[in-house]
Length: 93
Image (cartoon, rainbow, N blue to C red; front, side):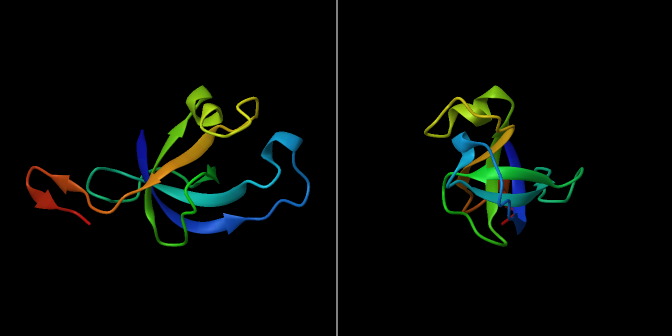
């Protein structure tokens, strides 16, 4: 799993049937110190995350399996909202 921060939303008026009703969010990947790494990704939201939330997400085939209709083209899905990150006893969030 990966850590990221929700930085926006994506609106798609046309999408495949298997993604109908799924909210799409823009997620900025973060490292273990909650510093930005890489480019933002579009992720399906399964947990009602919102702008500014730190989340954990999965990519690849596992991302598609997290949705109710598992036969879908999702390559990134938010699995949970993070309340706190602690690295070697130091709280990061």
